[in-house]
Picture 1 (tube, rainbow, N blue to C red):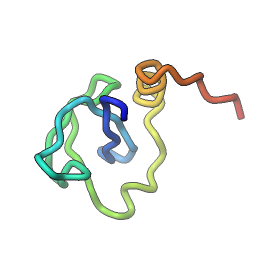
Picture 2 (cartoon, rainbow, N blue to C red):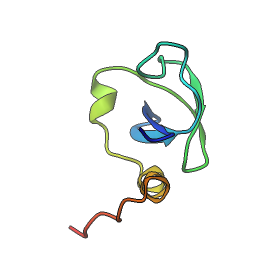
Picture 3 (cartoon, rainbow, N blue to C red):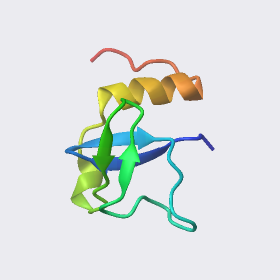
Picture 4 (cartoon, rainbow, N blue to C red):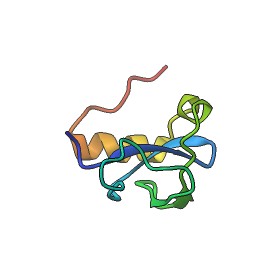
Length: 74
């Protein structure tokens, strides 16, 4: 398990180190989170929000934290 969690917010999937509410599998809609890209955003836990593109800044920081290689260029 990684120390961060993915959270849709502001039109993209972001990642956060903030603790989720006890027992929650995701941040409830309306929850304020500090993202790995340095923004303070409000979670949108709707079904469609999980289909948004991944924030490049959060992706890069999540990969750094987890020790994963950067994605291959398209």
